[in-house]
Length: 562
Image: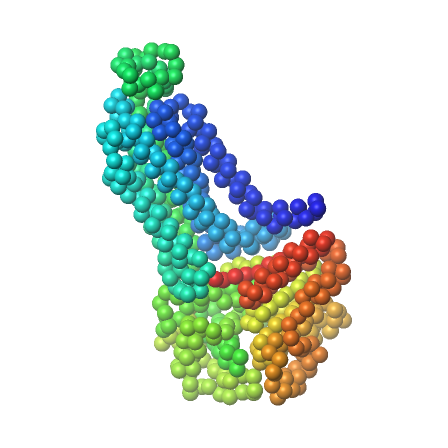
């Protein structure tokens, strides 16, 4: 029971810390406005709605800064590199959850924003109903019973607040998963409205409607004044007479510091990415496979990448604004400066890329064996239609080297991040000897997809045999489409005989496999890395957490680009 609680706390540590932070920010702002004498008259006029509006505003400020950090991919990548060097697993786990943290901050802004809006609507009603001609400096209303709607729509905070609420609604509607699946471009375009949101947030408090008292030493808040009247009875709290009237000035808001800091960090990151992505990258060659997979081989000066990382690709001939993420399947090394990206043609952009490659290089296309349709070698200069590369960026799959036992589960083209890991281990014997064992399970609908990395799997298998450690690397290939072509299977087995005994029909029996792993590695920290469809990742995640509660130590990781 206690172990299960610890695992739950560790799994949700980032969320727990964030809830503690915003609780502290909210409560400290609430208490400050409740007890500080300089807010006495404004507090008496507006009541609890003042406290709630200021406390929620403080939460919005810090959330708007923190929500930007996970979006700064270059910044996150460098933090991961630093965390890896000092072996800070807690930092690495938080970085892996950066996308979730971005969503958490976004929901915090959403709820705090609407809460702040409701509180200010109540403030408008209180300004109107509690109008006092002796305290005109702190009252936004011009007369008793003024329409609160006029106070909202006739002020800078009201107009900017309405615009920010509309932007939040658009961002929320475009960010939900069904809408992202329908139009991912709409999601990307509308997300840039957040820059306008930050600018409006910066303008929001500039009118200085909310004010604080600055002469609390010479005018005790709530004291009797010479010009006392029945209207002032609600503001009397001490039996003291003051000769000096209260002096009010606009709030000294620090929101500009939060907004400018977030925009500064974001601008630096975007500028760096813009410069780096426009550095020339040569597409040296490409392969087209029968399983609708394309492999692209690039050469880019000073390009460095770690196994498991990913890049963004853009083809100006297809679209000027679309950048699509793909895992690196082979990283540059000391002997080979090129890097490879495998992608499956399942969408409009990838289909257009395939047509573009064939159209521009049709005269150089040559036929190959049964698993490859064509192969083309391109010239080093491609002035007519280059492909831009942005990256590399960090991924949770880099944590493979943090575990003595790693279980890599791939669905379809999801093997690409694990391919880069295997390519790296095949030539880096030092890291290979540190790892106790790697299990690889690759699930494919058609058997043709195994051709994409059959040579790599064979070479990795031969490497561990040469080290006299055959158990260090184990892999199984699952074909879910039972009606497989015998000719293709025989050809695969003839070309790569190592794969023959490891090909199985049907889906893996996950419960049996997890039972087996949990019994073998009882005292080991096992890393479960999954890349594939949402159905697959959800199933593996559930099983990992389930067997964790039984005393095992499964650390689950998966990357999701959408």
